[in-house]
Length: 131
Image (cartoon, rainbow, N blue to C red; front, top):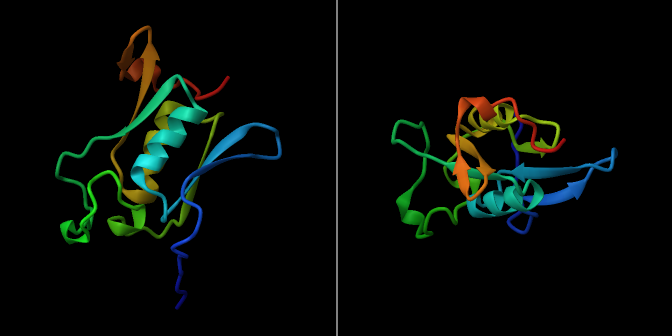
């Protein structure tokens, strides 16, 4: 049996350059939801990441942890076999949403800024985070 241990002092979500000199967002189970959202918006300024829960998700969040949402770590409520996810600029809106659901069971929604408004539409699903 393989056990995974996560260091409490591990880096949460962070932005780092990859070998092709483009940027990517690294997310692991020690990442806080609010840090993921903030880092996503800094790296991809025309996009906003939101988590829209409807109560039907199979999450294992314990209200007894005393932390206000979204200041919780992924590992506090996601039982996942995947330990990290890297979001890169070549990905589409739909790919990002799908990966969050597949990896962590999270209902991620990516909004696109059009003028003064943040919009969510199937028309944006094929839009890449960076050109």
